[in-house]
Image 1: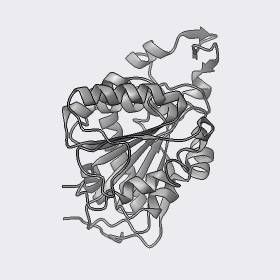
Image 2: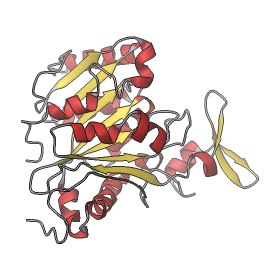
Image 3: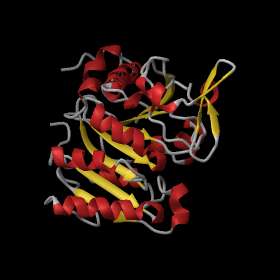
Image 4: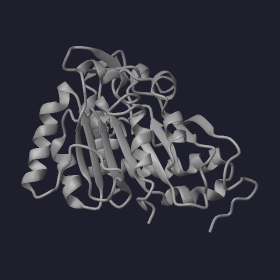
Length: 300
């Protein structure tokens, strides 16, 4: 099925890179509907955004990073069904400092039993802003995933494997302020058949109608949301809405995460928000989610 060429089907060592994408969330061109919606300041030829709190972020400093963190574990095997974990970071994040080093996403992926790779785009750089950028545009997320397949094939070592990576199902993980990009990605991204699960890590700050419609549209998908104090009310509200629509809802994860599972997991103290990606309902919660998918034939 695969032409692996000089690259091995299974890597000798894990590989991590930070690559520039053409289809990254930023920058936004002037004709973009997302640019029209989000940039509300002009000064000396510069575009910027003033947030509801009055903070000003300039495009060339905050919304111009095209980089994406990629990771392929050493055990990743092209001969087996696989999946792509796409991670959307929260406020105040930088790829190297926060996603790679502090939250240790590559290590969490590698530590799981899943045959999974990681793709994590940079959104607003080190800013308190949930701007989804080009992921708010119709088809934006699909274009991003197609390009991600090319970069993953290059990272693996054989560009001819791009079709394999293009075929992989996706689990989308959102932390905190990543919720807006996640909501648009699953409802405007033209990826209805590809995104098999959504995991919100204290991230349901809004866009509830989009997450509701995504869950209801295909009951073979899974949805997991863990919450602390600031997102508790919205989680409880969405839980009630789904229950009223006849969706079975759980408050804890079963040993196996099966298609159609909808889980709302109460967390702990609000003080844990900053560390919930690496210390949630269990240490390394993303590893835990992937381990529960071991018998879930997500690639079929």
